[in-house]
Image (cartoon, rainbow, N blue to C red):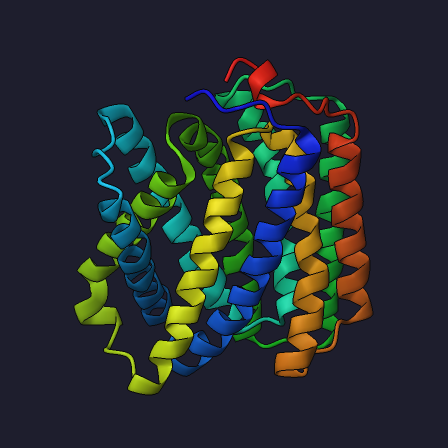
Length: 298
């Protein structure tokens, strides 16, 4: 799918806005997950998201996606759904800033996946950056051990690391998705796949939300939809390696929201670990060429 020429800076700014909006949604989802469980929260947010975006999709009388695009929607929906479920399960058990710091592994993993599946050039600096980032993860883990973290919080940390790997895979699929379909279609069908899969397990893992929770679920769905459209628009116009660093801005938002909403304080171990992970990612992508999609054969 051919897009109008867009500067990498514009794509980066839109992606940054998407991350800020998503961080606000994270705070809402953390509260809902604590109250009702991650499975129920992700399920009903997805259902609300499909209702919102699906209505727009149908109102505009958009055609059903072709086979190739549909396969991409299904693949990313599965990867993103598993990532989201694991992340919010972990977020119930781990402070927001620490959770987001661990997800910073995703951009580095995305670099390797972009090289393997998108043909983007992997640089030697990525290896050095990966080693630095791994040290950062170990520092955060050391902070948990020093704080005498219980088995529940350690399990949450592991879940978030696995979620980061799946999120990296979903970013690569998003890059391909965004080249095959517009942001609205990407958002609708990703939410549809996630919601459909989770509904299959609803009789065992989920209940009907309380009436008082629906406004928060609706707000989370709206914020998630806006964020998804922003990211899909940006990833359709700039390389994954150009946009990967924008993920780091989420740490600032999560630290602020975690403190204001949940009274969470950022430990020195989390700050040091996040700095190492971000530093490793910067080393890995510092020579990335900001090539607009229109000039990269999109």
